[in-house]
Length: 285
Image (cartoon, rainbow, N blue to C red):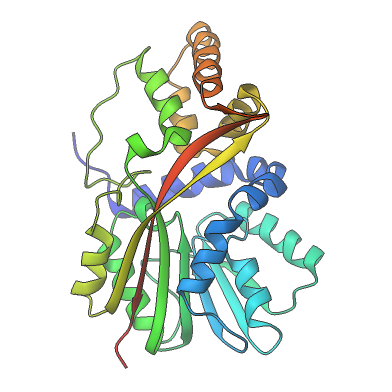
């Protein structure tokens, strides 16, 4: 079978993320609260401060771009870029509700950034790079648009076994249908899970002062069915696998996912572990 071309992958992902934009907006407050620690870590690792011009890659519905805009203040500005226009429409509504005048969003491919060289003081990106068909090309673009002696901070998912939050539905779906083993070089949720992989790409592109940490946390739900509902609303890659099941399989798989999630009960909540690889690097001065 011929592998899809990068542009075909990008177009498919554009359709996927536009499809789940309504779900992301529906669950916005929930995930803003649950994932706030990641947004603050990215803002800190990028060394953001008042007056900076910041680029956020794969902004979706505004993470961590909106926090970045609040951090740099009225003297600074943030540009968020994403493939999915419908995701960005949700981000624009949030921007208006927050009264932020220093935040703009535009559609685009992060492997071909529509900006001049050395035009940003920092770059942030959360759960974007692993879905790209040409990650080294994106890293080169990050280096191109950053000013000298400035920082990029990135968050990507770590290994599947450390992320029950994401692994549970995949494991259950695999109980019903045969799924091919993941191609470690193909775009996907865990594409950059291997320690040192993204850091190595940054180093090869000339970045230095590189740091990497596997950052642990959890996502908390009131019940297993709340977890299942959120997944089916926002997780485009898992939705694509779910669609391979016939209705009777989906009914059984739904219950198995809920039952498995309930095993992570902690007090009044279900606390599903996550592990995120946080990588930061500085462009030479």
